[in-house]
Length: 241
Length: 356
Image 1 (spheres, each protein chain N blue to C red):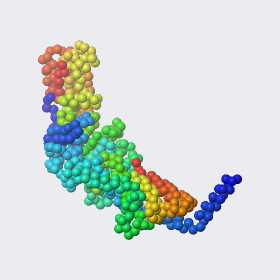
Image 2 (cartoon, rainbow over the protein chains, first blue to last red):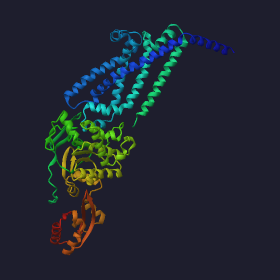
Image 3 (cartoon, chains in turn red, purple):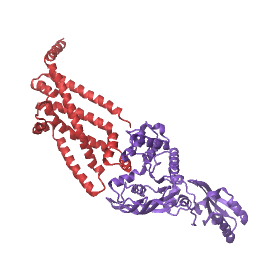
């Protein structure tokens, strides 16, 4: 009986906590999170895809037989690879703080939805680029040889052969990156980034309002699930192998 | 060996390979994949290059469209030196030379139609309608018109290779390079692909250079052959000549491995027919062409009043040419009469060779 009574009490505390003023904020936080994830995902792909292709084309698997070209490839690869590694090795929370001046310069503020997007892109693009680089390396060497035997330029090989061949893999990489961005965007709440993470920090951490925190976590779980399931379906739809 | 070669139409060479070296720098030191290679391929012929794995045949084929750059020597295609081509000139050359691969190298993400379209898009300059026409033409040639909407995954190995061939033909090349085009296929499919290549060679007057490790492919398809061993051409000539009179040990070994070797050493005959059965006076007779269908042997034997024993024999076909190769022995011991017999045979285009 006593257990039943106490859980009844807990349930009433929940209904009090959630019935009143929190839902509008939760809804707003959800929308903000979706916007942050979506916009930063878009820029991540726009920057990360060419970066990944460049890493691949200058990497060891594509080194030219001509010494001068190979040397140029080596230097470009080394520089880009180093930058990518640096960005990937800094913890996201620290990156957020380090980037505050740069973020202000780019979008005018380091707070809210806008202020979260540049650090999200800068953190995710190198990650995405590495995924792309590895994907492209998996493409059968025979495909390159066939394209080169037809007299294709490197640009033609990339656009007409490499990207179509790896398209399902690229979709899967976008899904993985989107999920990572949902998590990162929540983290940006710590420095006032907006979205569900911001709510969870403010209510759950600073005011000990466990129900609000748990609801935000539940919504994050749902968002990630939806992204993953839809992503998997898209990948399956475009896989012809 | 006597002068036997039936004169072929003297067409100008499409490909001239002159003193080509390909030197690789490996961890174990410099290594010649090709060494002083000379070749000449005539217009409209099927030229086979045979060798074991590592003999350099793959490198040699790739030198012809500069997928591999020779480190020395010269390659001429239709009288144009290609060795120094670069950039646009090189891409243009490659667009005029089709290539077929052992593992097909198709785009799995694209339909048959799109795969055949790829070389046309790369070359550019065609309207969509012209592209569609070319693709239909190429698919028709390989018999895949009704498979255009399928993906490579949905096709059998033989059909995939047909797509590979259609793709190589889409730009209407004058030269087709085949890199072990049938090595990944089962025997039956191999036969159908070989028949297709032969058909294309005849209908389009297309010059084909193929590499293979199998003598049966050479025998079915090639007009002339070059045998490659450790980066060097060790034997070259008409396929029939090379089959019937192989000179180099590598050639003989390759023939033996393919089960198409026709020559047997006297010692092996001895074990087969027993000692003292005239093996000591055995001769090998080789003839080809129309003579195979005539009673040349018995007619000559009757003229000379000689009796012969056939110890071994094979009658077959190399590409379109029938041949017969018989090992015979005589009860007669008079050298003069034997020599006279052989001279008569030689006059009837039968090649005689004493084995013992």
